[in-house]
Length: 528
Image (cartoon, helix red, strand yellow):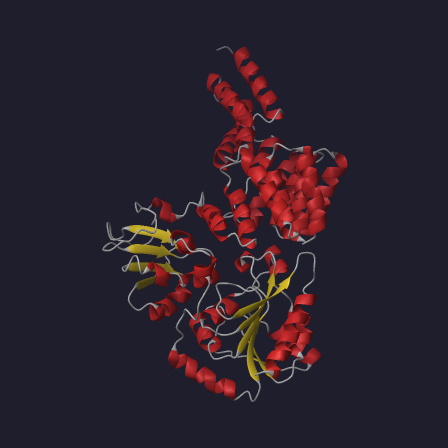
């Protein structure tokens, strides 16, 4: 074909892209590229089309190839900056966005890039400013409204986020990711049926998008639809490049393994590994020879709890497995799905981790030294100030009604240096909070488990502390957001045997849930 035919193909590809025919646009651009390779224009159109189709790796490669030919093109820098790369530090993710904006400072799409960059850097307020500026210059640009949606979501301004998500979908109804974001906004407001519809509309346009499937999974699980949600939850490891993908070991399907070895590997956070470790016992009924690879902080606990299996610390580079030593593998959070559990069999029936007796007895003794009254552990926040933390955790200063409850000896279970917070509430509410500095609440989970097992009660938000207390069989009163999927649509967390949830409903502050917990705590003291 001649160069003129190459240009005709590119024109057709651009037309197809504008009409949301992204598959056709990609194919036409690749044909044009093959004629006059390397063709910068063809590379750019193909990269845009691949990104619209959700094929991020192809898009990333295309943008990089384009930028080798046209390094001063803002569109290319904006394109590559819009592909999320979680493993890249935030400051490095900002660089292509800044370059795009400097090349085209008056372009709204470059301002969208700066909004996204500010959000990645943890500054949603600045992200709002950039997005609003882009909207003021070009109100019809869906990406600007989507950037503002993201910033509002991080600020937990859920109604404002919903309005932006609706506007973005109205402006670009063929973009699947915008429908998914609308679903996320609806989910945060507790409108689960509408959220599911919006996310499924996005998946109809991007059926292989792992993030969209995960949004659907959490929406289903929040609504208590366990089996459907767990099926969708399998998308969490798709495209993550886990080194388990490189092992020539089949994924366990739940059928008995009478002689071979089953590798169960830890994933997600340490709290997830604790919660789902209780299903190892059921897996042993079908696979008696199990190797568990987990967070190093859990090794001693799981070895004590399951003395007949091998437990090793998770190796972030590659598991040290002799060839042929393992018959099948499974991620730990996949156990309930593979075992075919329904909600009844999914629920914890009692304590499922064994504390160290040699550490439990001294803890019991020093708790007695605190004096009369219930011994109550407390944990109220996560380590980081993130959008998730703003939705699912509290400030200790909000716990006034709880901390004023008489006849209680409070014990700090919160990890991190919280001495200033504790000193502030102690002075404000006239309460003493015991702190056992010999236990590292973050790294010494065995010590935290031993302490929690001796407490009368634990009050906590969605932290590792409440998960460990539940695993020890200790009674828990916990503060949870309705959108925390581990509630699974119930009034308590099914994975913690003696728990009661006090739920922050969508759109509410924590005050009603905290007041309800304080009343329940007062009743608990009266009826001890």
